[in-house]
Length: 606
Image 1 (cartoon, rainbow, N blue to C red):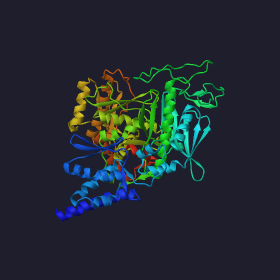
Image 2: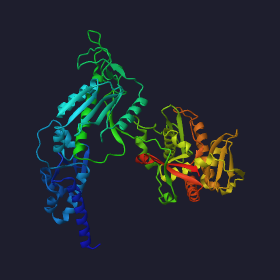
Image 3: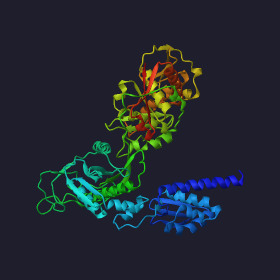
Image 4: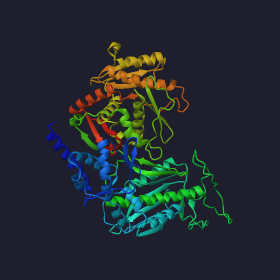
């Protein structure tokens, strides 16, 4: 590339990066976030504050950083900063500024504001801390609920500098406290809530304001995952230790002394269940500290909401919450809400096959991870546990009803995806099953193939037996057959059935005639490989010397996810849709599953 073109390209990139920063700051001046440190680290310079960090590497880049750092700390317009830098270094400085901006280390230079206790926290969460502080000083909040968490959050919100904090005492069951903001029209808007019991408390959302749907979903999840019932707390005043016994407030064990142990692996050294001279229970220290911590977390969630008011940003696909245990350990957890798939939806035509999407199983698992969050997940975590992983991959998942679901795949990752999608199929409920066969997949093609294979498998297509030419099977089918009959010692029969639709079906049965595996495809080789995979997985599970899972899990005998089966069934489905024989629908609300990379389709005969 000619030198002039390179310089022009560098100027274009530089200008775009500066425009991005300037657009976010109306005044145009930026500064380093307060508390940002710059230190040498293994021959490089680390620029960091809190959990954010940028590495400045290379002699030229480090020299430029040393020159611009004092100016950035004082505040400067990015274009003026670039103008003061030699031309050969402007692209480097533009990249440094862009990285600082990306990692939330730049702040807008604002007019001075009155000192506010929460200003230091606001500095860490927004580019416009002074504007957020002014908003806090003019905002009225309401805290609903009763008990120690409410008292704690009210105290923290007052200390943070909010203009007015109204306490409204009311029974709140598993919602320990709700924080609401008064809008300009004098209505109350949800901000954050705390829910849980003496064992686990969920606070948030951390990255968006609450609403009725989010709260209902979290409360439902907390209720499913908790073994403790709420305990009615006497209506007491702070620190009294006595009450009327009327039960007008709701307590969940945080202050009532119902928790008699410590968090696993911790030793708080604190006794519980003590009483004062009058016999009334005295709040034990862990529970009192937990309530205090949760109140502080709710107050921080309110401050973060005020920060978002002055600097709106689209939230992540999954809401995040702080989950705190009785051992006072707090961690951030995602909560995915998967809407129930509808009966109706968008009919797919042949244009849907124009997009070819293939997602590797490890990539799919990374996107699906919020689905099995241990506290707020929709389903359990798919794990290999002590299951044998040869000759095929196996995974187990325990659902909310205590059943063990089994997954099979060519690899452990594929088996984990398999059982996870089966668990999600159960979680969707029966609504879509009446209209046709529901298919789920980590790609659109996989969901279509899953739906059509299940539709075909349960339909009478005039199947008739046909001889299976073993010489026409592929290497995968031969390996699986050898593993099943020789390695695992199963006396299995492999049978082929064909129909006039262009599809064939392969069944693998044991010596008693019980079905071990089944698959449909357009070629006997693909169908045999899929059916044998399921059969090997089922027998391998039974033969595994397992202690952590039952030997007879809920395991689907139908294969729809083997690559060859998926490809052939999806191609057949396209032709069937074009001919008007099959209808494929993307059910209503399926787009709500896209955040975790799950696609859905419903297949039915026309």
